[in-house]
Length: 210
Image (cartoon, one colour):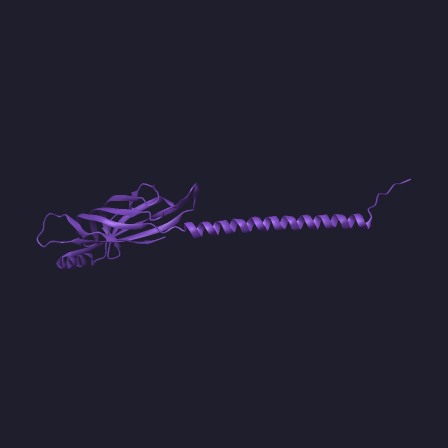
């Protein structure tokens, strides 16, 4: 004799009711958790949305800028750039920094690497770099353009800084963001001066993109 166990329709309906109730409760909990995380993230962004770093050119000295041939340039330039973190609650990590000089869109020194560093709230740092170029290829018009600037008494050099940064809020650190800084050095040229040293006559605010 065989014994069969069966569930009544009432038992099945009760089980289905409990499963549906559990699924609704789980869905509500997950929705509430996601909404809370999004709301907290938006609130933090709204309050602590970081301002991009500020850079300015402190000084620039040109020790050499000479053509070894019509298309090859030798250069030696010393520059100091001021970096400021304008944020009250956000720190900045700087990584993979490089600096180089340019003239009328042409790179005239090799890249110079700067060490990575951390910049605290409202901190200011000086970034100094010695830039050198040996046999840097330039356009055939380079000598003419420099000669024209010498006649005018001023030489306009571009100082470029780029790298990656990370924002720090408390113990949280963001992913990496690329940034580019463009500074213009106005270098005075005195007619008849044979010292070979040229220095910028004024500092300047630099443009920054993140």
